[in-house]
Length: 210
Image 1 (tube, rainbow, N blue to C red):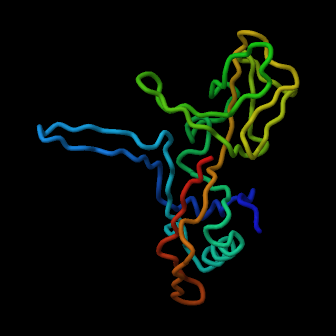
Image 2: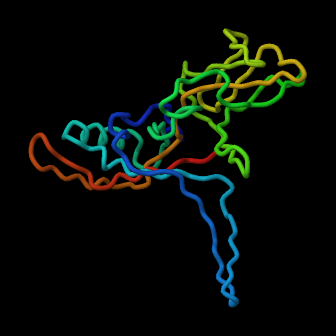
């Protein structure tokens, strides 16, 4: 049986033209008084995209068909580059080792999870990052860039130090990352206009949460 996750990225030139973003699930109950109650059903947001907008020519169409067939439709997940949100910093800024705080050392903990925090004061949302781009992760201890002494798991997003950071040491990291995702359909509606132009009106992609 094919692996549940294939460590390969959907063609980034096609995802560049896609549409989509984060989705949440909130139940809103209207009371007889006219007031309302709102309840959050998902702890984490989940992202949805439509890659159909990124198809520009028949070669793009062929690349998507090949990728779809190798994943067996919805069966296996893969990496997806969300061009609007793929860095530990703003997309226009360079990645630095102090972009995101991961934790405070205690002299014993050696593993730290990559995360990205959204918001600054009122109610920040902490997103777990599980698919860092290999070679992109930069780590700092108390603001000092580390040239070695740690490893990064590209599948789980765990940073493992060979020696635990000392008590009170601030652990930070900067990185690029992909979204673990899958096709949200087992059917591609391919339209071929001529030998050079074609389209797939809808290619739904959905984030896979761990």
